[in-house]
Image (cartoon, rainbow, N blue to C red):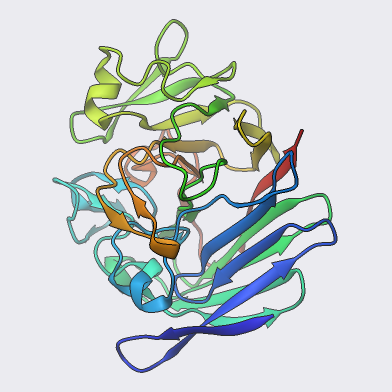
Amino acid sequence: MRSSFGILSDGREAGLFTLVNRKGLKAEVTDYGAALRGLMVPDKKGMIRDVVLGYDDAAKYERGTESFGGTVGRVANRIGGGSFCLGGRTYRLTVNNGPNTLHGGRDFYVHRLWEVLSEGESSVIFGLDSPDGDQGFPGNVHISVTYTLTEDDELQIEYRALSDADTPLNLTNHSYFNLAGHDSGSVLSQFAAVYADRITRTDRNSLPDGTLLTVEGTPMDFRRPKRLGQDIEKNYEALHIGNGYDHNYVLNGQGYRKVAELFCQETGIRMTVSTDLPGLQLYTANYLDHEPGKGGAVYHRRFAVCFETQFYPDAVNRADFPGGVIRAGEPFISRTGYRFSHK
């Protein structure tokens, strides 16, 4: 079901699409930024909780700086030095994160009105044509993002892309989750698991230096569920650099598999994250600062956690990192899912 999501500064109208399944799960997605705006999940007592942070209307998304729920590209995360070499040519990008390019520079995909390609009761497809030179990247790329709410309570996100030239590509969803509700405060008492034995070590600018570090015996170890706040203030290099958790995990396994979980004792809601991608950025909203949100809520530091499935940061500049570049004429398809249950 489509409804108006308000008017943008250039006069265009954004839409809000409500997806439902037969068990009472409901998702709200908007064509502005191809973003997940709301996710209403029943808790163990039957109370409905909206478990993602967001804004009230499209104008606030247009002004917002936190990428709430948005589709991030052409390359999510960081590219070192704002440049890369491909096909014997050097490409220079907009630097917007210290010396690096973050989430594509400044002309963000999350601040664009996507085309609605298809819509139904439980699914909607958004499309974006990203021209050659867009954000400094080569190739004309057609991208589609499909949101599907399944009958087994999984919100699936499928990414498709086709380019007429070799180009870096790393698409992710930037939802901020809090299973006690978007307006409930700190997320640090909730239990998280990430099924990864290693992380990519970063320099002081949060760029991978090529080293893979074991998580064993460190505060970065989430192979068994623990509270997000249990070790977040420990004296450990990675936590100092990220001001908390803000790191790429080298996920175990291959193919579409379970890679992470989040559980809230208060509500009994459990979220299981699955993906076919090799990496996941765990981010504990360390830089949220008095951000006005939905329904009068104000979001602060560590009020949510992100599970951004991805190729490793700076993969285009590191031959030893998997993926991150698609080839001309070869379709790219990837899938990530967030499945909910309660007890």
